[in-house]
Image 1 (cartoon, rainbow, N blue to C red):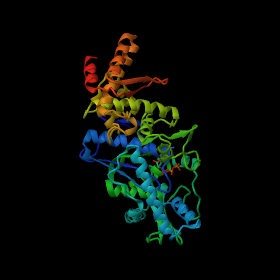
Image 2: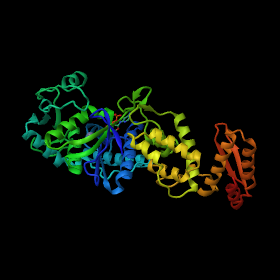
Image 3: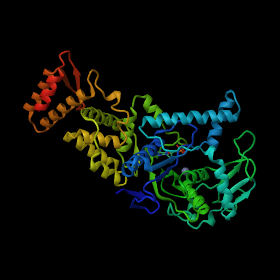
Length: 468
Ligand SMILES: Nc1ncnc2c1ncn2[C@@H]1O[C@H](COP(=O)(O)OP(=O)(O)OP(=O)(O)O)[C@@H](O)[C@H]1O
Ligand SMILES: [Zn+2]
């Protein structure tokens, strides 16, 4: 039984899909104008864990995960224009396409490195302009939208539940929001569904002239096309709750009044830098690529994300990353002793309790300490580690995975002996290792490294391991 905290009801609820043969989830994806920063990676990993849990619970072929690329945006146009002004060859349209293509490639590379599975569908807004126009026409026909000066606006006051997701009234929201006042708006709260494009700006023909869609309608149209009018889960960062998600709900529920749109809304809290949201506009960001280039493995970054519950703000520290690397190194070496393995039930239970990844990692520690390496392997796999086997950085040169696993397990027993103050036993294990040709070195940080000597004898090591 999976429980999820639903922003819509502000409560942890039992998750029941509409169709357990096809569990459907939509997550708002990136605007593709630049490298993803570490904050942007958080929802990717959070919803990847949820996707993996749903696949575990309902079967791999029974979950449909959609995450879009917003490839129509003024920020993309601005980057392309800056390139053109700097002398880049090609029309603005070419440069825009180049920019979005390269950004999508970067996004894939970086998110793959974090161990995130690719969603089943990654629709690009530019491929769904037709359905967006159709949805806007439907909204106009029902009186929920109006055309004015080449724009189409959503009539917010026509939807009585507007604000329900955030739990605020329209008037409160206006007071707190930066709403654009424009002469063609009936009400300052009304938001853009379609806007005119001039000159070289990307644009498509529509009943309201050549123009482009607003950001909010993209998600409403793409989720409808790929998941239907009612689906199970909608996710994204908490910064999107208002106005983006309120607007998605208003559009979709008015276009399809008999459907429920998304039934469970999940929002991840922000990755912060000194108490403030990491964001491009504040300039306080570093990219996932920066960290990878500095030598932090993607698995380590993933581990740091998972160590905090998605509903809590978190920050990145080098100390957290160092700890993560140590723990993962030990676990990766230990699982070299096992093949296969199903996830440990307490790990599944922790994830099923509103994605308690922190508790899931605590349970992995318990498996590691108890020497249950097949349970550990299965659990790590469920958490999105080990998809490509044991990474190179965790290996010890000269040893096979199974040999490292064996040595790591002897070291575990030695640590246990030490903590029970049985120093004679601890020394005996070390001597065993030495006799088999393995030199052990304890570092100041409490980790133990090992190395192979020319007299390495795996058969002897194996025998001594069995004795212990
Ligand atoms: N600091 C953060 N922590 C967690 N999630 C974030 C953070 N910043 C953005 N996100 C999430 O990243 C996803 C992609 O958002 P988007 O591409 O709109 O980011 P952005 O607007 O370019 O970034 P920024 O907010 O820095 O301007 C969204 O789900 C958003 O909620
Ligand atoms: Zn969206």
